[in-house]
Amino acid sequence: MHMKTTVSFVALLSTLSAGAVCAETWDMPVAYPANNYHTENAVAFANDVKTCSNGALEITVHPGGSLFKGDEIKRAVQLGEAQIGERLLSAHANENPIFAYDSIPFLASSFEASDKLRDAAKPVLAKVLAAQGVTLLYSVPWPAQGMYFDKEVNSVADMKGVKFRAYNATTARVAELSGMVPTQIEAAELKQALATGVVESMISSGSTGVDEKVWEDMSHFYDVKAWLPRNTVFVNTEAMAALPDEVQDCVTKSAEVAQTRGTEVAASLADGFVKTLGDNGMSIGMPSETLAADLSAIGATMTTEWLAATGDDGKAIIDAYKAQ
Image (cartoon, rainbow, N blue to C red; front, side, top):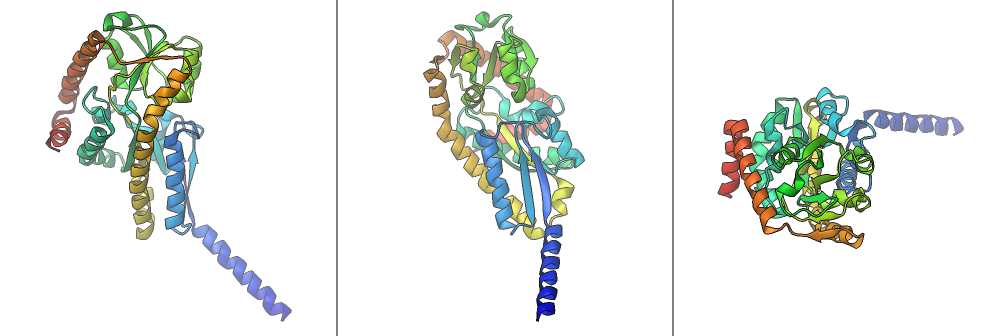
């Protein structure tokens, strides 16, 4: 009896060990803090995948650029150094201007419009990523972008010479067209850059402003609603293809849920972020008529430039967006 019990126990251990070996584990680097809603949504996505795959795939989310820095994440996934990742793709517009589809100033200035633009861009974006060995999974918007300054600004002329934090080619171009001096700063380095005076202004969402407590370094927020940039989650195509069909299906379905959930959270938080900025002493307001007109002119210039840079692919996105 004792021998049978021992043999049964050994058999059980062997079965459990075999199951553990079969479980696939993925690393998911993200650039934003653990308490940012994008990161929380990524963790929820990972939990959904673990549940619907019955533990066959476990995804570990690495927040705050802790595994790979923001500007390293996309390449890490392309090379298979991480199987899946989240990235602000517009930061790679110098690599391919299509990646800036979500950052064309004043093209899509609401959550509803941003979703329509996402759907219009999906075929082209998926094609571009597929050519790089990457599969598009889902994307989630940030709240509409506002402008932060450490002084009152009523026109583009007031911006001349201001040191500006850029996070992609689009924001750098906004700075150039408005006479500011752009410096590329990733989210993880933003607080230090503000505190040390490396930058003194930026265009970003209320979410980033709250994350970084920018009221400690800047005084004015203008709710210009320039665009809603999107964080995109993508997977190494070979890693995805290596999964059993039912697990691939689980990942895809969990991605759809994450996209809807993340968008709903972003919309629900947007007004609260701006209120928090005001509650902490920042001056909150809409742009003056002069500033709004100046920015609109910059937007028109940049739309023309983007279409010229992207050719037929860019035209396909804009045509599909306007046809909805």
